[in-house]
Image (tube, rainbow over all chains, first blue to last red):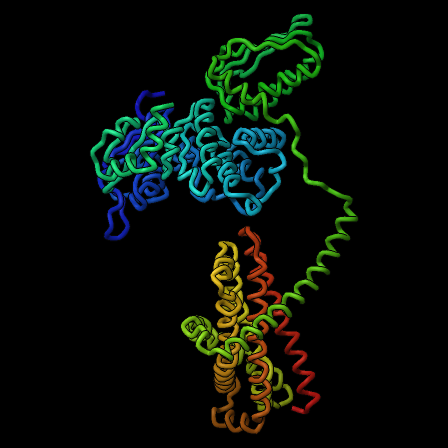
Length: 258
Length: 377
C-alpha cells in the first residue's frame, strides 16, 4: 500500500444556504492511526465526516480516500471503495426490521458470496468481538439498550473487515463506564485488525484513552492537529478552554501521574 | 486471482498444507470450500502442519476459517501446528480463538400444525384486542372532549385550524374531481341501460338518490380514510417511535387531548363539508353527462332532479358523514399508538389503519341503511 495518508482532504468548502460550515479545510489521516476530531457543537465535525463518506455535497476541494479521488472515481470504483470503509452513525442507524444478526450479516450478504453457515459464524464472531453474547443475536434493534445499539452498529461497520472505520460520536449517550469500555474496545480492535479510525467525538476521555492524534475544528478549519501534548500547548482560545477547563485539566493531571 | 489459496499433501499420517494469497472476505466463499475439504482429511492424519508464510493478506474471515480448521482437527485428536504466521496475524487468530464457542440458539420452530393453529388464535385475539382498543380510544376521546368542554381555554385551536387546512381545504380539489367523475359514470351507465326501455329520464333519479344517500358520503369517506387517516397513523406512529408521546406524558399533557382530540374533531367537521361538496360535484357531473351523452337538457335535468329527490335523501347522506369521520379518526389514532420500535411496524399499522377504517365505514353505512329503513327515511 502507498505510504501517503489514507484520507487526504484539501481545500474543502461545505455550506448550507448562506452559511459556510467548512471553510477551506485541509486534513490528513495516516494509516493505522486513531484520529479524534473535536470541536464545539455546530463546528462541522459531523459535516466533515459525512462529506468524506460522500453523503453531503461539497462546493470546493478534493477528497482522496485510500488513494482514490472521490471526484474522479466512477460508480464501480466508488462501490469498491465503500466496501473498504465502515461507518458507525451517531444513532446507530440499525435497520429496525432486521434482527441483530441480520443487521451484521447485511453487508456480507450483499457484497460477498458466502454460505449461510459461514455468515452465521462470522456475525457471531464480530458480535463477540464487540462484547455481545449469542443470546443477543435474535433481538430486534428496538429491544437493545443504547450501549448495545452502538456495539451492534460497530459490529456491522466491521462486518466486511474494512480498512477505515468512521465513528460519529461513538461514546455519546453512554454512561462513563460503558463509554470507557467502548474506547478500549476501539483501541483493541484497531490494534488487532490494523484499522485506521476517524473518530468524531465530544468526549475528552476518549481523546486521552483512544486517540493517537487529535484535530480541532473551529471557524470551519482545523486550527490545530497533533498528539495531545500539542493540544495542551496550543494558544487558540477554544482549545485552551476545552483542554484546560475543569474536566480537561483533571484528565490531563491523571494522565501525567499515570 | 486464480491463485491456489490452500494446497494439501498427505504423507502417511502427516498432512501438510500450504496457504497462499489473500485470506480475506473477498475470497471467503472459495476458501470455505477448501478448508472444509482439508478438514475432511483430518481422520487420515495424526499430525497436521499448516504453513501460512505464503499468505499476503489476512483478515477476520481468513482467521476464522483457519480457526475452524484447527478446531475440526483437534476434535479428531490430530496434532496441529501453524507456522509462518506473522505476530500481528497471530493476534487476530488468538482473538478468533475465543469466539463461537457456544453455538447461537436457533429461533425455536415448533410443529407446523401447532403454529398454524396458534396463528389463527392470535389473529382472533388480535381482532378482539383491536375492538377493545377502538372502544378504549373512543372512551379516551370522549373523556378528553368532556374535559375540554369544562375548560375551553385548553382546547388546541391552532392545531385544529392547521389540521382543518390539511384535511379539508387541501382535499377539496381531489374530492371534487373524483366525485365529479363518479357522478358522470353513474349517469352514463343509467342512460345506457335505461335507454332499452325508453326510460332514460329515470337515470336522473338514479344519480340523485344514489349520490345523495350512499355514493357521495362513501366515496368521500374512503378518500379521507386513505388520505388523512393514513397520515394520522403515520404521524402518531412515528411520534410514538421517537418517544415524543412519552415526552408529552411526562410533561403532564394528555396525548389524547393534545394530539388526538383536535385531529378527530377535524375529521368530524371535514366529512360533512367534503360530502356536501362531493355530492354537488357528482350531481354536476351527472347532469353534464346526461346533457352531452343522453341529450337531457340541463333544464329537464334540474326539474326531474327536484321531483326525484327530497330533503330526506340529502339528510340521510349528511347525517352519516360525521359518524364516519369519527370512526376513521379513532381507528387511525388507535393504530398509530400501536406502532412499536421498527419501521416495519409503522408500515403495518398504517396499512391496518386504512383497511380497518374503510371496512368499518362500509359496515357503518350498512347499519345506517337498516336504521333509516326502519324509521322510514
